[in-house]
Image (cartoon, rainbow, N blue to C red; front, side):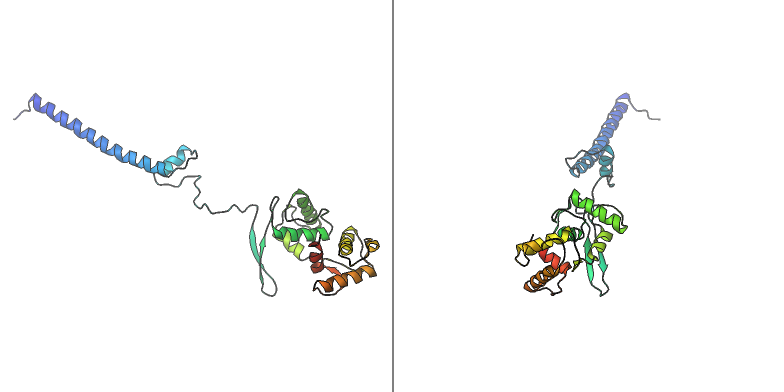
Length: 228
């Protein structure tokens, strides 16, 4: 039986060590490449070790936003409703701090109904929020303070008008606008809807292409509000 010489055994050991080191180097190069690849997917923001690991192994990180264009709609939502005649209306809901021309229209309704004291604007501020909550409480709605779907539908459905015999501070505000526009005498802006006011309203409606009802209805209110 042939026996290996000590030199040959030593040579085999050296070759084994070299081969092992080569395998370790080869394996480590793939690991480093994966680490660099994972690093390229990271932003400058700090991430937890779980996220780094999940990227490295091809999983989805827990706090990685997949769709950057997705909007958090907790405060602002849109929905569609259909009227009896089949018309589709898109309703946009608004919350505290929002600004939009539609908000002005809803505030005008609240103002006309006496829930809002200050001049209507296109911003939903804290005073408007309080007015909305009061309106919601009166209508049996959720008192969210937001112009949500149910509140908007209720506001739009309001049959707002002032006619002969009515009285109030809001009515007096509209009479004062008629005075400024020279349709009504200053002494007639008493807060009471009398014959003089009816005549002034009809003249104003005729001049602005509105139906000459003699009543301060929703369309007339909108035109008057634009003159504030």
